[in-house]
Image (cartoon, rainbow, N blue to C red):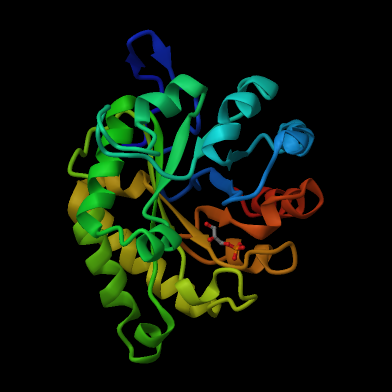
Amino acid sequence: MGAALGVRLAGIKAAPLVRPQPRGAQVAPRKLVAGNWKMHGLSADIAEIEAIAAASRRFAGVDVALCVPAILIERASRAVPGFPIGGQDVHHSDEGAHTGCTSARMLLDAGAALTIVGHSERRDSQRESDSEVKAKAEAALACGLGVILCVGERLELRDSGAAVSTVLGQLDGSLPDRSNAEAELAIAYEPVWAIGTGKVPTASEIAEMHAAIRDRLTQRYGRQGEQVRILYGGSVKPSNAGEIFAVPNVDGALVGGASLKAADFLPIVAAAADHSG
Ligand code: 13P
């Protein structure tokens, strides 16, 4: 886990997404700021992607990526060569009778370097289970795609004191088994109640959750679990990004609404740069 992307598959090679440095007492990991465009974006918005990619180059210490609708991946990746473009979901099968679905090889073929799996909007609306999310993550990693695997509790579970146990349960069910993946795995902690609401957990709530996730990752993957970046997602904005990036074990962010415009997204990337070792 944590090695550069670059698995060759039938002549297709993913562009490098991220190269995390070993986590150590002196060396902070590079932060990853990924945008999730959800169901937003038309060809006219490629110019915004170009603006984000161009300006992101100024922040050499931060990894930046944009996960766009599947139909935009090819145009986006051609427009910004070398800048990581990702998908938002992937099917676990290589191919077959799965109407409307996209395989990992198709994402790779279109130029994607990574994909999100297990976003709460899909867990809810598509009834995706932990075991499906795990199969998706494994299929994507096997192809050389980076994976951002999302977990997060609903409000009633936070209110009842079950936030950490819920998220650890999701991890237990959905973390990929392969511990020597050549492609990178990142975890995004996205409390469902914080997505698109303007509500954000307190710094100590984020710290508690990210520490629990880190523990689980090291239990599961040993020292490699130290290199898996843990992103926070849910109403990340220019106004709160600095405070969030200062929290221990926050290795970046998965940003929804504020990733759609360079003017909103780039200050978040800048905040990550300010908090990079
Ligand atoms: P918002 O940043 O719009 O709250 O969305 C977060 C999210 O769901 C990213 O995947």
